[in-house]
Image 1 (cartoon, rainbow, N blue to C red):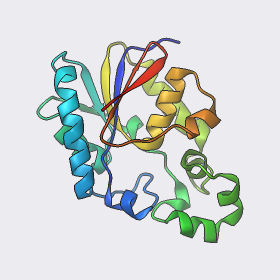
Image 2: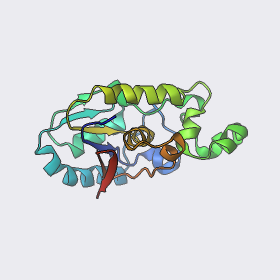
Image 3: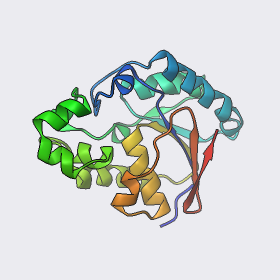
Length: 189
């Protein structure tokens, strides 16, 4: 399937990112570094926003905070489908706490995408991917998307035709923009 060009921005570093704590759909504010990440994205976004693309943002605070900096006064639509994977009982825990309390799940899911999607009482990969595919199916024109790391891994994997394992291994940089077009990606820094 072909999609319009998408400029994907992961939110800047949060206080919980810095602590190694699993956020999922819980809230954590941008750290000072995260604010700098959003300002780096703002500089990169200026020529893109001049084209007038539609902009969509996750409802979670860290993405909203990033969007307000990176998109400036450009209008955006908040879309609940852009929220991060719901990581069930793992939300609020550090990876070390997950390893101690759920050693079997932790040992068999070393990458964040797999770990979050294996969480008891969590969303699971199939539902998470379906939510992202539903969003993609509605895109008819080039768009800017401000969301989350795992959300972006699945988005990028779907557009680039990757397997779930390859999606889980994708890098999750902050302070950059992933330009997705013609079945591939380019990282703008």
